[in-house]
Amino acid sequence: MQAALEVTARHCRKETEQYAQCVAANPSTWQQDCHQLKLDMAKCTSSHPIVQKIRRDCAEPFAAFEQCLKQNQASVMNCSEHVHQFLLCADQVKLAT
Image (cartoon, rainbow, N blue to C red; front, side, top):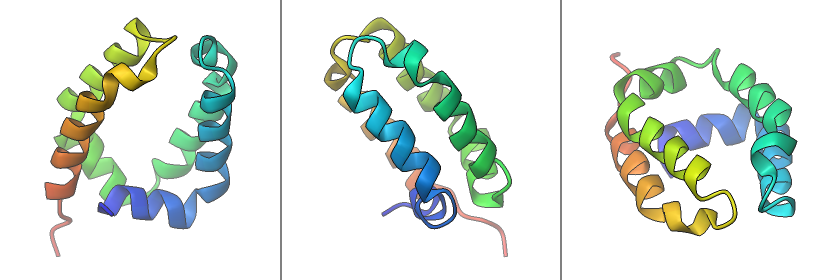
């Protein structure tokens, strides 16, 4: 699994799981219903350098994914290609050591 997801899973598991469960439980209203959980997850991950680097380096594919979600709130599966593109980008991000 790519580094950012590993960091998120390791350090922000509770926030990530709560957000994912909320999105799954609210397919047509998740954008509003899960907003606070999204913020909680973002706040948790924002302190990790690899996530910060992915946010910078992969901002364009992530923005496209978020836009797709907004346009397909009732059918988020339509955004699987956007997720794929973002993950491809994120997989290539490395922290300079």
